[in-house]
Image (cartoon, rainbow, N blue to C red; front, side):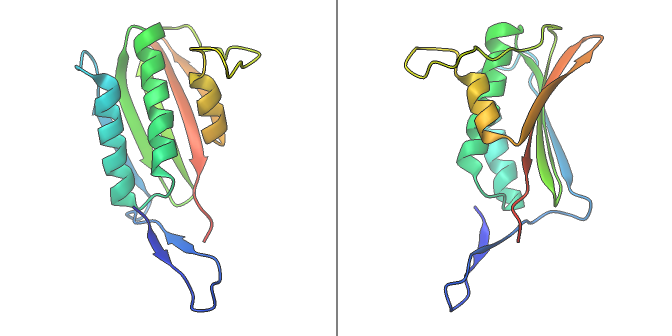
Length: 147
């Protein structure tokens, strides 16, 4: 859900984010949670609606891919953090594996599997991995819409 205005002269739409001063961070503990991908989607959709962040479907897909990768390749996610400011949205998924994710290259759209990080690269403006002594955080950032 976005807050949108359109001028009477059909000039471009203006999106206004609904954030507290300094932004907001939300964290979902996911360790041993049942149905982590579905729970992450629900959590993300709610936060994006509260913030009036546009493009929710793409961002929910990005989150689902990051969480699914943690389930499939890293023993499951430990937590999901969403941090929204007036300049960007940062998504972080932490897991207990120290192995950094690697996109399958070349990307082969017609084959099953191997599309998660391609989706993350396509939807996000930046993404990467931060190693920790206890595992890693895979993060992605989406720039805020310009008003």
